[in-house]
Every structure is written in C-alpha cells, then in structure tokens.
Length: 371
Picture 1 (cartoon, rainbow, N blue to C red):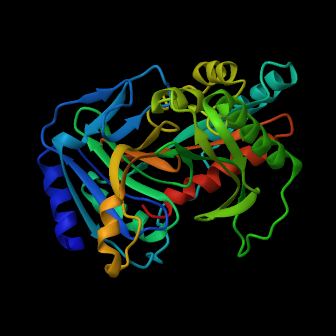
Picture 2: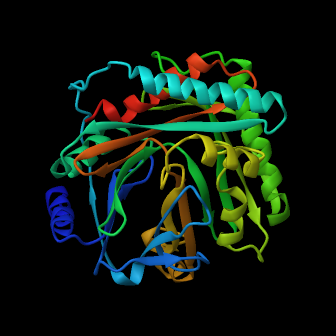
C-alpha cells in the first residue's frame, strides 16, 4: 500500500470515530495499522488474546485490546527526512509548575532518606494548544524524527487519542525466548554518545537492572545480561542494559508482565511503596502514561532457508508466536484541542531538585519541538 493510501485510511477511520492504532517499531521503515471494525471497547485480562494492547500505569485498571480478528491490518513503507523547522512554542518557564515539581522532589528525597523507598519516579503534565485536525501530521513528524523509537498513534472514541515515541521495550517474547531492558539515567545529547555518567544515574540504572533480574528469576530457566551502553533517544541520552533468556514453559505472558510492570524506571523501588507515594503526591492521573502498549500473540511464519533451490525445506518453517510490548514514555494525549505532554524522572538519594526539573524540561522537548 502506498503511504498516501495508508494515511487516507487512517484519516477515514478517525473521521468515522472508529478505533485504530498505527505504529512503527524501532529501526524499521514499515508502518502498520490495525483498524477496528466497530467502536466497541474490548479488554484483556489474561493476555491470551491476539491483537494490540494499550494498558494504563495502574495495573489494576483495564487493559484495552484491539482484537486482531475484529480489525483490518494495513501497512506501508514510510521514509521521510525530519522537519527542521523549530517549534514556535514559547519556552517560558512556568514558575508555579516548577515550584510544585521541586517541592514534590524534595519530599521524595526526604522519604528516601527516611527509608520509605530507594527510588521513585516523579512526573508532571504540560499543556499546549493543539488542533486535533493536525494529529496525523504530528504522527508523520514523529515517524520522520524518531527512527530508533516505537512511534505510535492510538485512538479509541471511548478512551482517547494518544501519540508517542518511546525508546523502551517492556518485554519481547518469541516462542519461549524473552528480551527486556533496563533503561534509566538521562542527560542531554551534545553531538556524542561518549559521555561520563554521574554516580546518581549509574545507581538509578543499576536499581532498575537488579529489580528486573530479581523479579524474573523464578519465571526463567536462564537469564543473560548484556553490557550497559549509552543510547541516543532523540535529543537525550540514556543508560541501557539488555536482559534476555528463556522463560519456563509454565509462565504465560500475563504472569511475566505482572512481575515487570510498572518497572522502577517508571515507578520506583520498592514498587508498592513508590507507587503509593506517586498516587498521593503527583496530583494528577497518569492514565496511560508509563503504562505499556504493543502487539500480543501475533503469529509469524519463520522459514529455515530462503534459498530458492531449497524450496522443499521451507515446508519445515516454524510459526512462532510473538509479543512485543513497549513502555509508554515520551507521549502525549490530544484532548479538547490541547496536547497534554507527560514527562518525569527518577529520584534517588543523590538527586538535585533543580536538575530534576531541568530533566523534565528536556524530555518535554521530544514532543514539543514538533508541535
């Protein structure tokens, strides 16, 4: 399908107020979409369905499902150079928002010093005027700008309209093989990824790694840690460690997700203490920000040999069931012709409140620069 036909079908679905999700996985040119055939709201609780899920931060809330068998699947190749036009939005600091964020960060540090938790992620939401009619144009800009991210546009008339460009995999499962990542620590990209990391960022990232490994130990038959590396995500740098291995046969997708979500990269440690602090102190509902999204239980044929002279061997190709979920970061919600931009950062005992505010400002530019 041509790119123009693809976006025309998305526009038609949007005009008809029918649910859809369009998305591009990291480092791929193919953009896929699932167009649901009615405005019915479907949920999954056991993660045994096949389709695309959209799940909130609070894991006790419902996970929305676009079922594969009730959706039309389309795709196209999208390759476009980033728009170099700078945002016309004001960079004026919201003094009251800054004061409030710093106050919550200071309270979090005090709680950490008192031993309530080791880390907590504090977030906030910025609001900018944004005409809803420009949604698909913004999606194209995100696709062109963030090649290494999971870029998506998700819409359900009974839930809302969300877009994002997230750098973080929550979980990828292919057969019994799994892949996840520990992603934490942030600094601004300044023309090189060969940078020094402060002890605060290194400790923050290690906390996430240790939590993931500890959480998965009882569910896996083997686990491997990659080397920690610096990765570029738009205008930011992060520390990343890949974690992979084999799941025990008795562990389904639901049990593994429950152990991982929400990770310390979006919540804190210990998980429940940090979560309660967030719910009491952030002062707004995160909704789907820091939740997760992606394909579950998609069947994909794998052939052993693509050599044309070995066509008979292709009959022995396997069909694997693949799930690929991403943490919903660097995202925004379009509501009442406004863009609600969600940003946050990890707080540890070594956090400096002013620096934590500046980190959220830098993260907000991931999206704001394209509005």
